[in-house]
Image (cartoon, rainbow, N blue to C red):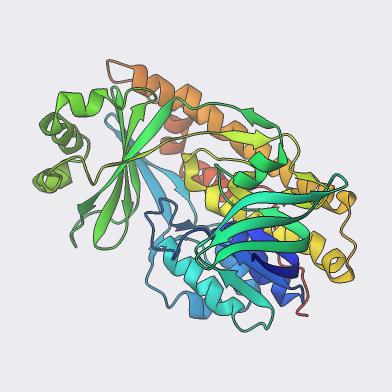
Length: 405
């Protein structure tokens, strides 16, 4: 017999959006169950950037000092090299928050920390190895969901199902929500190279004729992203590993003596880039947030932080209706109304960067002249504060308004 339980809110997906929303709702006195399909958080996450807006939320929760005891790297600026021009793209030192930097931290540490904080509240529940398979509906409204767990089938009855299960969301698929696709001109090959004490500290992006290379400081190693034109994956291994290593050495000369660490293609993983957005994030009894509502481009590394902002906004709007047992479609519409504009504007900027810079660089056979906006930033340092604020703080940043229940 399937196990059947009832909670006020059931969240599908134990990523940043789902775990943050679960923590905030439970802290406000709402009974919450978070279902995560994997057995643990130790997966190859690509998004390990926690921006000043997220660190500010940790402060508002009263856990920032303890959180920052976890191993992390502080990044106050993002640099780029476009041909022979080297400059700072974003400067976070003027963002009006307590932490004026990006913290690079393995996402599993971040998620485990949220679970640890949530465990102090009596109704906080997280089930690992619990994969959502379907929704339960009645009279046109979602009233629960079905999941497969290590112990067998699980039926959850709830006032609200939240889909926070990523860009391949089973919740939004089963709900039949309409998706707008915006496309992307690139995919990313991710891999690691060792890092040495005398290497540069700040993240960097290197733009050359037909090639773009990203390096993120992870302490004792570099997380590297080699950007390729979408649809050209098969061409890269067909050319062989030596030319691939040579390209890396040319783009990052200081790392030329360690490209031999790439002995085969197995540790080189593909990240398929997609950009989309739900037209409507909700239906009666159901709401999608984070990547389930809007898959972001990796441009700016803002996906995790927008997902967390969604979670904070959803908690602020829905905590009281959930406690009162009267969540309406109008309440769910308020969440989308709050978050749709910053999401759309951020995606618009990402699409401009993708189409006017990244696409042109990847299509170019010769070194391009840096775009005018980048040359201005190289000449006038104060302009670097604009992308610093947009990346670090975002549009319409959210603050914790939920009470402690």
